[in-house]
Amino acid sequence: MNWFFIAILAPIFWSANTHFDKFILSKYGKGRGVGSVFLFSTFFSLFFAAAIFVLKHTEIILYSNSQNFFLFLIPGFLNAFGLYFYLKSLKTEESSVVVALFQLSPVFAYFLGYIFLGEVLTLVQIFASVAILIGAGILSFDIEKVEGKVLIKWEMICFILLSALFFAFNDVLFKKFTIYGGSFAVSLFWQHFGIFIIGISFFLFLKNFREDFFSLIKMNRIKIFLLNGFSEFFYVLGNLISNFATLLAPVALILVVNTYQTVFTFIIGISLTLFFPHIITEKISSRHLLQRMLAIVIILIGSYFLYLD
Image 1: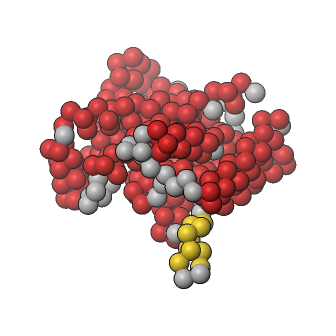
Image 2: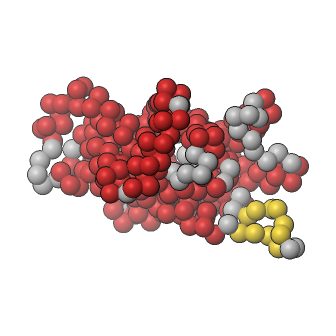
């Protein structure tokens, strides 16, 4: 299963990106929304799209025309909105919890992949995916008790559901348009150009996003650009690998493999909390560790069966 070893590289890079974003939002985003980080991310896509065009301009011009122009942009639009809701959830919740709940993407990808690509999973693959989703579900509960009740963070869960849906739809359409309408480089170019279009639209028409963006730049220009630059490098690299992996196996399976981001994010988060608490702080009480370890074990068991199939 060569696709498995390619796909598993993406969550490693995304885990680093998640902690960069969480650090930026926590340290420099206090009292602000997610507009600044969102705009940095979407604007960075323009540089990536430009680099692809320089390397593959002949191929891009050959496969791009007035008929498929808008279709090629749709995955980028979906990706941008998925990023927005992901950042909204990350603003109010710890990295490891957000990433774990984000593993609901394979559920959406399973149905969307069947509808748009005719992809069907085996019973073992379905069983493994369900196990992974159960593990993710365990982390949707806040074990801190208020008035004797366990809190369910409905707003955060809604943000994650929307993000997971948009990202899953992005992957399915990216694969469909790449296979039937163009090439990997062409789809990648227009996807990132579409992300930039959403970003510049938010910048032009949403005042609070502009204010967040300029305020963050004024605070510490060099440091902010460096932090966002590293963050977006990891994010884009993870996207590139994941997009390529979807061409080698059903989209739902690739997104299931992406659940390893939960493990990587958890390990990085705990390590930073223990050795660099001024950078990232996660809850590491025995109750929280037990909850997350149980969820991760279930996720890994599901992933193991997925790999064996």
